[in-house]
Length: 150
Image (cartoon, rainbow, N blue to C red; front, side, top):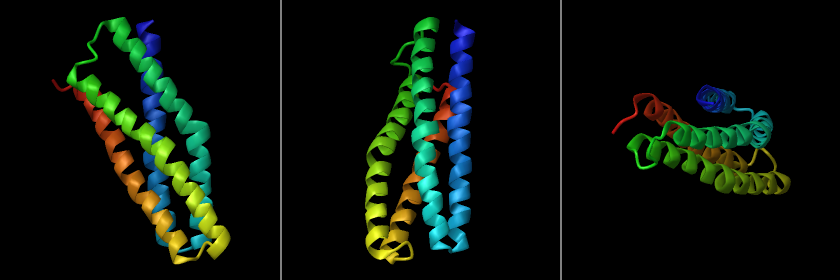
C-alpha cells in the first residue's frame, strides 16, 4: 500500500501546489492588465477552482500523508512531518476562513459600488497578497517534504 499512498500524496501535492502557483501567476498577470472586470471574473473563477479542485486535493493529500506516516512508522513529532502539517493547516485556515469571507465582501462591494471601485480592487489586491503568502508556505512545505529536516 505504501506505493499507492505515496503516489496519491505526491500527485495531489503536484496538482495542488503547482496549480496554485500557476493560478497565482495568472492572477498577477491579469491584475497588471488593469482591467477591473477581467480581474473580478478571474477572482470568481479562482474561488470556484478552490472549492471544486484544490480543496479535494488538499483533503486527499492529508489523508494519504497520514496513511504514509502510519504505514512507514514515521513519528508525527518528526520536524519535517510537523512542518508539513503546519503548512497544510495554514492553507486550510486561509482556504476556509479568509478566502470565503473576502469573496463575500468583494461580491457585496461589487454589487454596491461596481467592479471598478477602489474598494473592490483593493479587496482583490488583498486576496492576491494573502495568496502570495499561502503559495510561499506551500512551496516551502514541498521543500520540507523533499529535504526532511531534523
